[in-house]
Image (cartoon, rainbow over all chains, first blue to last red):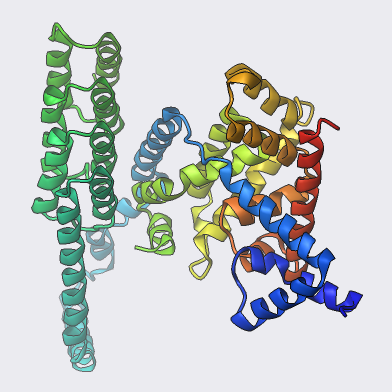
Length: 276
Length: 181
């Protein structure tokens, strides 16, 4: 017969039971107890029933403005960082300026300075002899890792299933230094993928690599080839976010197209004003 | 690249790479706020605010911290500030009811949809502290240990709150179903 203390002890494990975070021995002891104890059995059934029932509440998707606003904010902060007072201060302290201030004017002191620096250089060189080998191994490993990630992303982008291709896009965003091969694959996906969601995600993935001239050029060209208004608008927004002046001509051409969706035309016009 | 690797890069000036963390977490955060506020527009704004604060306070991210714990700390502050600002606004439950009424009539709903409506209503009637632990553990997939670190409570207290939250939720749900409340 179970006591109140037994029941309290068993019930204290119920929250872990719900998420399956118990060892086999404890699960066995709970099951043994609830077989004999009606009130604990009812309690556990009610808890698990409600916990499972909560699974019917679907995960909802936010509206498209959330993503758009985020990328606009990110771009404006990125521009802000580039022109921040700290950056200007760092630029003003460039090595050349500092060196000019430190280097002595009299030849005797210049000679003494040179000898001291030569000595420091030789000493440091002696002590870090083993360094380059180690660091070159790490660099090689990193390069191999990059290469594997890149090949995996490319192979996923070529799969038949759209969800696999979306995974490929996510994988590509892990690359720190993307090679031409992956950039070409991403642009190819943007221009040729039959699924609109994949093409839209390709726009987002390319945002991370928009500093590459090849990507900028590809995005501008793609604007003329896209036929989905959603993808066209995403591309226009991206080109405005990265302040790509070279997109001006492409936007003008797009506006001239007769069969262009009115919303796209309107967006292209307002974006043109922002870029000019 | 782990969340922490990405955040450390953001911290050292590569702000654009935050896009990765946005893609990983914005839907989850949006749903976190949606379960707490019951308002879609507000949840989008609060999610946006979290990422804004992540950027603004990026210097305060500690290398050894877990990114998601830090992100949820910011999210809780964002939600708290929102409650302070709009404390006189319509209570959560009325919002759910308004949205539900606007969508479809009860006859048009399937049994599962009706069940979901009742669950939403029951969830919105839970005490805020209980609702928070339940949302974090059931919908955000956080471990009890992580929740206890986030809320600065003991592990035992979190488990007790989860247990009580489910019991209260069930009681309210059954009452709503039987038309008692």
